[in-house]
Image (cartoon, rainbow, N blue to C red; front, side, top):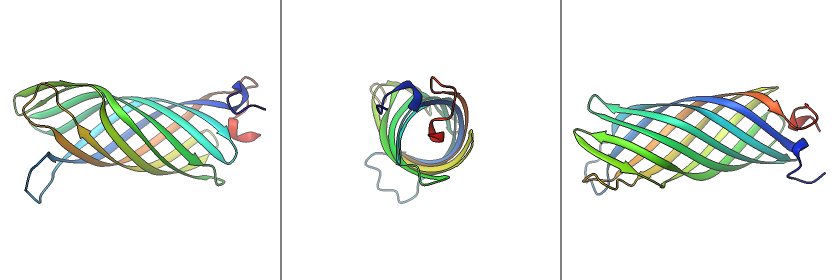
Length: 171
């Protein structure tokens, strides 16, 4: 069976919450500011045992402080291993489109790079995960770019599987 065949495909819906630290690029301050991030979206996975290739797309709201907000579409590609119920992943991606305001300084961004590493527990159609990430918020109109780092807690619920209706991991 080919790695990209429909029988190896799995689609799911995911939710995440992250604790986000941020600071302006070039800041000499040792302290990072703390905010939150909420997201939901889709996860598409191809399984060629023991490897997993995953693409995610999540509209994401960041509430960084009482005067700083960002709304992004975050897309990542990840590779991982299916080691029984444990699935480590690493990957990279972009906040492909972002609109934000930091203390009255409005901006619009595209293609802000992101790196991720995480660990999932896969239990049937349910996946629970924790992931760390770093992102360079490349602000096109604002005065200052920002470095973001976060720890996300994620829940993914499988919904649609390969052409035969079986979970991709059941082969």
